[in-house]
Length: 468
Image 1: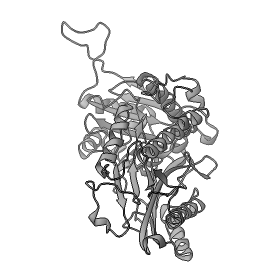
Image 2: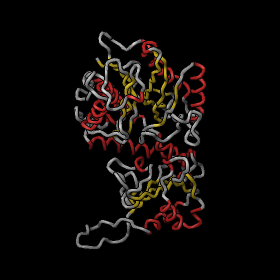
Image 3: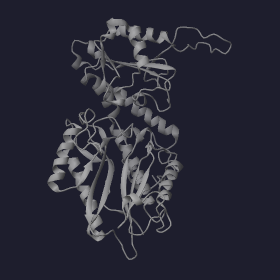
């Protein structure tokens, strides 16, 4: 614990998950989440549990007997990172992943407890989690390894797929095709042509879309991942506080770009990545925002804002925090600015109160917008799922420019064990600034728990980070 990067990360590490407890991590200030090897082992534990618990439950919910995912190298399906090991960076030539639920063939499927058949035609077994099927052809050449089988190739793969299907005779075959969801549209046109030609009309007519299955499998997270995410969020919070402090900012000298590049370097120095270019901006009394850019020198009295994210163990964060540069003699932000922040917090409260499993993103948006009007909150709601992707799989709760609902992607329903970013803003006139409108945009990641109740991944910002 004493090797955690920051005190907040140490505190949340005390609530480590069962999976993490099985794998003690070697932490140093340069390695807040252990070595790459330890991270990969932890991710493998998560993958094993997801394939054993989350996937069969979703296949049965969506009444899918077989899910077939042909994936080619450099044209990977969005679901690829959710079904493969951390050490697998790309599909091997082509890998056709097959998930078959044998319980669909039972007389009483609801009483069946048999595990899924997980088959990989080509590629690896992903650490033994998939049954890797190889070619029966011998490897020729002086460099051939005795007993090693060649990889499936070309039409041989499609023939192997047909054989696996004929052996199991599934009542339907789900494929990743969607006009709504990128996450469920991984079957390329070329692979679809090859698959249909190989299977013929008998099996092709059993092909169905797997939109909900793909989206919800990518979106659903484990309790062990929740615990890690808490620690990852603690790291984000500690870095935003450092960025918006006198450690980084010297009023009258530091530019917006200086703060931005400090963030990028700090994340890089930790051996971590991000899924988008961070943003930092200022608001200033008496100055239109379009006159303030990255070259702006930060001054006392400025309101600071950032939009940042970190990627670790294939999981992503998305955070917007606010700071204030104290004027000489000040010990806190003016009351008008603090009131503006509280109004943004109030919109977060409303979002939590309206977010629950079974509701669509558009239903939540309409309810939130109605309450904003009733309470006089001048703002926008544009929250999104997060997890394996920054703008993740699951229902959108508005977009900044679609406040009346998002067709398609806003019609998906919230489920337990989904993660979201509560992205929103409220604009408020500040008396100390002569009634000038100040926009307080906030974003905090939250978890819809297995009990269906939303909770913050760590906490939310309820006061400005202060630059002295």
